[in-house]
Length: 140
Image (cartoon, rainbow, N blue to C red; front, side, top):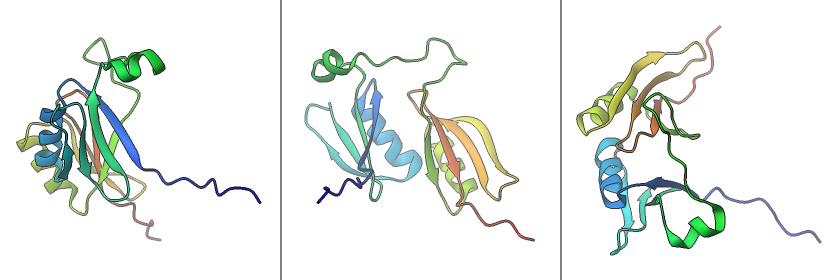
């Protein structure tokens, strides 16, 4: 009999310059509870439901030699190859809270043709964060 190979998506790891500062920022700007911040400040986690958002330093001896060094964008208009997306019932309130807590405004919330309200900010590490409503079925 074949083993069950249906994985659960358990972690998203974000590589940052300052783990403690990033954990505190995400907690205040986006409303997540801190699950864990180790004493060395080399690992932090936010409680975000089934999938954990984790933070670790950009450079660390444990993984740089195994998987390669993390590459960061070189210029202001470049961005990394990932985007963090959070869903909210009230996107406008979420956008306002994020900006009031240090997120850099990119694009204020607007209604999209596919039935979603979406706004964009950048976190304190330059990572693009999409704040969106849950997608609603189009009305006939």
